[in-house]
Image 1 (cartoon, rainbow, N blue to C red):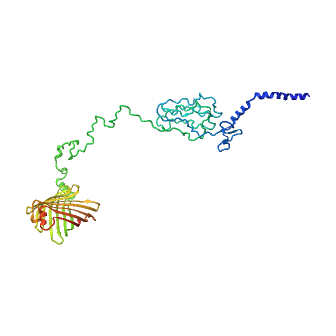
Image 2: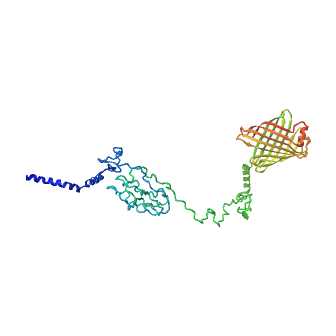
Image 3: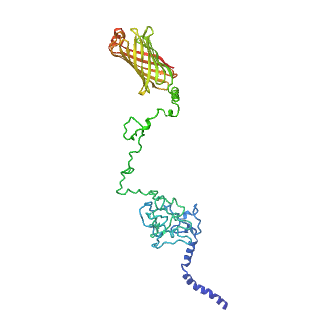
Length: 507
């Protein structure tokens, strides 16, 4: 009986004390379990029924595996990690204040949660006020403006670093000293419940205003009062009048800038004509100079040129003509001969002449000629004294002009000019003109005074070789004045046009 009473005492005490003990621990178990659960939940898991819980993510790819009573946390929206970044003045060179304290959290509102255990604040101690500064420079305004973060956000979970941690974009693309960055992260008005952007987000620079990146500093304006109008000009007082003077050689130009020539010294015009005569026998030196002249400056040449050997057709008449000339001699003195023949195939010779001339060069391209001419005509023969010039005029015109004084005192003149115009290396056109003048009427020879006749023609030749070239051409002849009257009185026309075909050769 006593043993049963003693055994029931603990049961009675426990029954009476149970409510008291239970009341003293009311709420302790739930809080402890909640803390234990919060601490032990894996990253990305929250309690079922939490504001950020997302039961629909259970079992989906990429969702964390959560223990019983917990579900995956709602995936954060793909928010621009730089939303709110103000980079409008990035790269400016205007002076700006240095960056203050990197993180000012003195005014954090209630309800905010500190970083969980083992999750260091990714922005703790960031001070970017003087990063890479080389000299005071304009500042970049707030790089991260987080003043409007809503309540309920939480710091980045462990293993999810801030994508902008340590980003220093104050000197990106700048060529001048980079401006200082002011407060990089202003979290003074951060509301509770906000969460930083999670890791593995899209382009960390999406939304950045890079409009002024890589801009060079504006060119400094020219200070007022600078006169650049004479830039590059020679300073006053420099005398350049003697620079680039023309050579001191005699010229025909009247150039007052050429230095004056000094007179020759007295000894320059004295002494022998040849200095070698003072060292060697003058007779031997004279013989040597003569031999040198003969071998190098007195070369004998001979040439025969048949300029025209042709047949002509016109007005029912067929004729022939020959114009040839040649020379033999040196460069200065030559014997020159010329010959012209005209006639009809069915008749006698109309006119034939031959000239024997002495030619002497008086210019590099012109010779003076004089001699005799013998002319044969049906009307009468003449012997004439010839004086003329022949040569190559400027622009490559070949000119031959002469005056004739006959043995009967009749004075006539004739001038010819021709020009070789090359079309190709072998095709050549030769225009030619000839004019005949007379000082008086010569009825016996059917020649009137003044302009007697004019002959103009052109011949196109093809040079198989320089020495042989056939040609074809046209020739027009017109008589004037009394000469035309003499021809018409004889029943002939004063104007004639002929087709000519011939050969030009020389050797």
